[in-house]
Length: 363
Image (cartoon, rainbow, N blue to C red):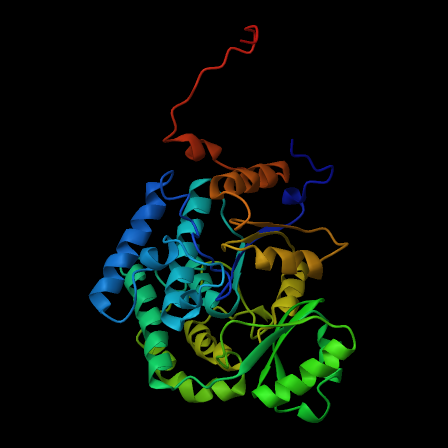
């Protein structure tokens, strides 16, 4: 049973959050494909476009074959961007079909592109999947050419102030590039400098874990790789958002100006991901319900940590530890109990209903 004595749907708005790299896992959404042809069709289109491009592996071949949880190929830039974009677009479509309509959207790192689409700034037309492919191919080419500056990235289980106080002589060489929540930030920099900071933090009992890729995302060092990204967005038709759009490089709402949206879409790759402050701003603006439109639930956890003790609720659309259908049912039931109007009949549109006589004696 799902029940809240203070449903938040009547108190504030619903936000959709789109994660970036790091939300993928082997087998992601595979169990949803047999139940929802809409999901399978999106992967089929992505597979065809990937084969036609000749520069990347079809996402289904990478995602749906047996693989270790730490499969390094899932973190290759072209593959990572492609599988994250197509899986989140599939989840977004499912959420729309069960009747959810966001009042605002935000993206985390590469998830900002999906937020642009969800906000109406990038048209969701028949060429959208091609744009996913083009963006993924762009990052694959950048990686192969050596244009992407390398850096060691480490997740630190501490608040930003504590981590920055531990930088010491490495201040400038090492920086916080992602501020996720009060208990997690990501630092980046040259290996030797990062190791010195990590040693200090671990010596103080702070947990640190390396990320499985070494690209200087969201740091000034990424600037040499911006030109192809800028070219991609300059060729893209960008319109005035139809929904409030929040950016993690602003930690606030983006102006309703297509050129401002375009500039931020490029600039965010050299700026800190201010996710914690963005969630604070969204809550201050009246958002109370948050859906993580990703496949791991990381953002939902960050929201819970950031807004702990305040009226807010976060739920993930997909989790690796639970079947996709079960988690989708959980999301629908949770948000219905929070007071939202939904269309759950879609979940049963292709199932064969079985009549159960509740008055009949047990077999």
